[in-house]
Length: 159
Image (cartoon, rainbow, N blue to C red; front, side, top):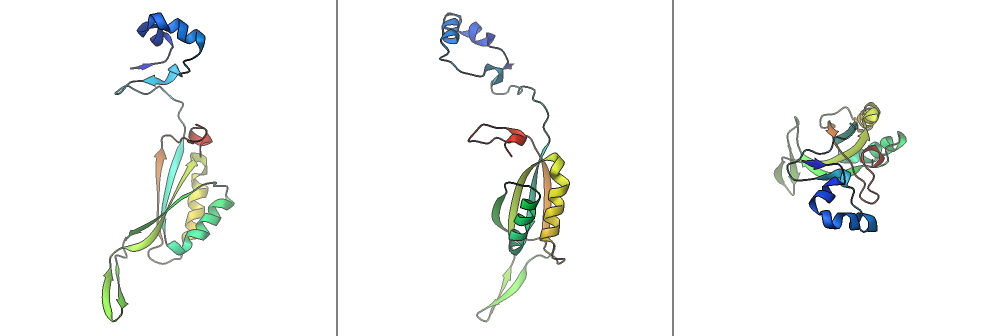
C-alpha cells in the first residue's frame, strides 16, 4: 500500500503530527511513501533506452567521437572478453601454440531518450564497422528509470 497524502502521519501519530508538521522539522515527501511489497506510485511513462554495444577495442575512439558528434553526452566503457560466430583462434607464443577462446572486446553503455535511438544505432554501426567478422553487436533494452545522484534529477533530465 502506498500513501499519497500527509493524512498517514496524522493517523499514525495524532499527538505529534500537528506539532511536527507546523514546526517544519519533518521534511518528508509523503507523496512517495511506500512499503515493501507495495505497488509504486503511478508515474508518467517516460521512454528511455539503454543501448549496449560490444565492439572491437581499436574502434572505441571512432565510436566515442561519432556519438559525441550527435550530442550524446555520456557513455560507460568496460573492457570485456567474449566470442560470437568467429569462436576463438590459435596464437603462436615462443614456439608453442595456444587456443584463445575469448577475444578482447569493449562494451559501451549509453542511456538515451527514445527519440534518439535510430541516430545512436546509426552512429555506432558506422563507426564500429570494419566489414569483417567480429565487428560486434548492439543490444537495446527499455530503461525504466535514471537518477542523477548529485542532483536527484530523474529520467531524461538525468541522462
